Length: 362
Image (cartoon, rainbow, N blue to C red; front, top):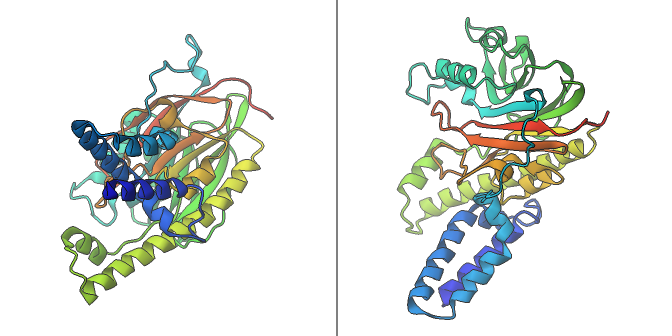
């Protein structure tokens, strides 16, 4: 019973994570990160009390019901049919895809010898009309320049790139947006990072202007020794082990805080947009986070509206969470959201069809 009460307190703190700025109070963000696991603990308590036919089952039931909207972020039910009207012209649909390509495997993290070629083959097979890439990498080497990549994505003739590192001769790391439709305007969104980035592009979709945000929020940037520690950790309270725990905690706190600041900047750009908005990218944060809630305000989440299952998008060494998103404003409506298990990066690509329901505002 005591453990159940402690788990209930942990869940209530996790519910605070989206509304408490981690720059002011940090620990709710950690509980928010652990939310899926805390939920599983409560499901285990429900089973335990059910078997014993005890009224204490109400503790976990009530706590879970208090946060029902958070469960929809984790596992959307979507039992109703799509809101998209039937017999609608395909011209009003925009196929979008977001993918963190991890530098096209420049550091050979993926042992697949031609992972970069597989990425381009995958994109060609998917045929998106709007493509947002994070950790976009180009170099001056033959086959790796921006012009070379553009040729491989020739079915998307319009593009905009913003580099945050080594932008000479359009070379370096950054983000890129490729579009089937003309790009009318592009602008970077300045925020506090030397590696991550955000920008928006205005595209002419049919006769409407749509503002597309491509976002890559602050990474945790864990080191190899951090991963090794987490893989082999056995809590012994030694000085060395406690030092490693503090180092990981410090990186998490820095990342949570910086993402919160970045999200506030991006949210102001979204709010001021004169056009319907599509937001795509790698937030490096879960739906149970302050950054996600800040950016999502006033927008719909394509996964929540038309997705299925858990939708986890991170495929790296840490536990897998949903950290990549496609958000949108009215009059768009989402259908056929997909998390695609393509193993060419440490992220899975996500895709959805967006139906432009009525004329966008000028």
